[in-house]
Amino acid sequence: MTFSEPDQRFKPGATLEALLQRRNRLLGPAYRLFYDRPVHIVEGRGAWLTGADGNRYLDAYNNVPHVGHCHPRVVEAICTQATTLNTHTRYLHEQVLDYAERLLDRFPAALDVAMFACTGSEANELALRMARAATGAFGIIAVEHAYHGNSQATAELSGVRAAGADGPAHVALVPCPDAFRGAHRGPDAGARYAETVGRAIDELKARGHAPAAFIIDTVLASNGLPRIPGDWLAGIMKHVRDAGALFIADEVQPGFGRMGSHFWGWQMLGVEPDIVTLGKPMGNGHPISGVVTRAELAGAFQKTSNYFNTFGGNPVSCAAAMAVLDVLDEEQLPQRALATGKHLRAGLRALAETHTIMGDVRGSGGFTAVDLVTDRETREPAAAAAARIVNAMRERGVLLGSSGPFGNVLKIRSPLVFDLPEADFLLERLADVLGEVSPEG
Ligand code: PMP
Image (tube, rainbow, N blue to C red):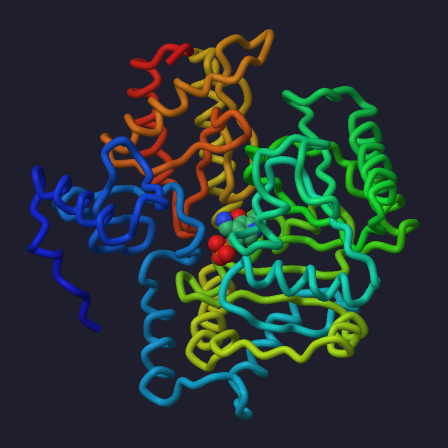
């Protein structure tokens, strides 16, 4: 296997500016890059990236290269299939069936059909269409500040719009359950947040829309990976079922073992979904996504539409996705995420003993959040400091991000090969950076 040499056209220093200008000219202004000084990456291996400047960066952010950048097993599977056949999905081929079987083995027996697409947005789009076809209703309930995709229908459910603010009449947004910063924090928090879904259903009905589905990212990643009250979803499901709506679990973020203790995020919430959507980590960077559901719901969809997706589930994509499942099992990566995540969070909590800006450290397996506050009493979000920390970490060779409605939550979500030495590397760098940043930023 050969990998490309670093791109010699872009040398350190002045060339970064030239590359930025070229990008803005060619791709237009809508795109966004990470970091005040964007990184130019030319190679990846495991949890590490190499920049065009020759520097190494620890990837503590990417959930796409789930089993590690350029994992040889996945690369080989892609190459082998690509040299044999790749085509659209209207011929018979075993690869998609072999993969569907392996994937469905990871689900309860009732969820027995898998359909394939290329992006998380497409998977959610298909799930919405399916829910609407099966229920005959059009309304959707989602969580404020969630992200479900970039298509028209999924973008309507995404964004920072507050509940009740102007948006499409068929969409109702409910507050994110957040036992750390939210309006309800006590033992009745789950029930109080669940009631908001009952009210959202009434709102939708008042606007002439019965609800077709309640959709959540099952770890609420865009909301800053909040502490979700244990009885929250069960409380909601009563309202959702009574209204005849379906539950869509968007597993694009937590799916495929990221959370360590559970292979899927919905398992942590204790409610079996009607429809599950999959994306990002599924092909380790190769674009494949999916919808898993009951045959009866797929059948209801088929009464209104035929499904064709030129690329979704093609032999090369399915070979990549199959290799991801192989590697997860053989290298026991969910188990590793569990151990590394525990170590990382213990180290972060130790740092929090001296750094009052760290208001809360939370997460599971390979997904960790550090909620930064200007004041531990008021829990005021320290958004400016979060931006400074993220950028200072980038300068020290650790790539992480921030999230949440205030942008004050450090998001640590590395490839699952991230191990104890990587966690220690991150902790050391963070200790340095925290020493330089005040809570006010
Ligand atoms: N759902 C969730 C929860 C996501 O995080 C994302 C992407 N960040 C999507 C859906 C959309 O996936 P894609 O970008 O592959 O369309």
